[in-house]
Image (cartoon, rainbow, N blue to C red; front, side, top):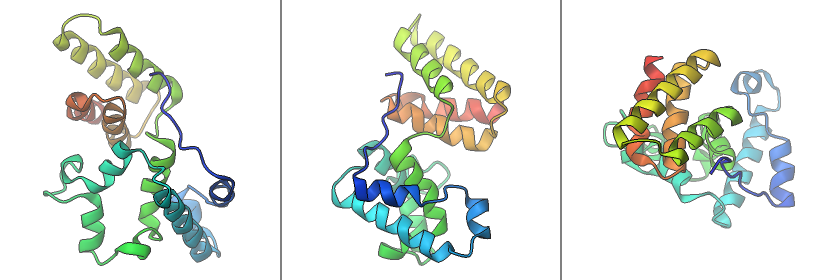
Length: 179
């Protein structure tokens, strides 16, 4: 797998997606912020209605085990603990990052994803050798592409889960953070 699939959107979903500003900083400057959040919520609801979100991406939001440092709570439970649930949750500004992930997958450069997948697919050597290779690759990508280490750590964690290599998720996460 050299490409991470993007959720195919219906015409109505695509029209809503086209109106969404995915940049949180830019969104805070907009006068139509509330309309924007409403469209984001509508898009999320449409995706949920037709079960379009891949299970692994949904698990990132709903499974406490996928929330490293979450003190046994899923990301969804954290929202709810803070008083945001149901319809309001899908219209919360911080939900935007999850919706983006639900649709597009990990936020990493395509060539980084290809390189990561190639190392896994080539499976050259023992599992320890592959782990060493993938950790070195992750650190190099973070440095060479000047990726924010914290953000990249979460994205590599997601990528490992996306390609069904959950056993590597924590290791690549820590490799990105150490870059």
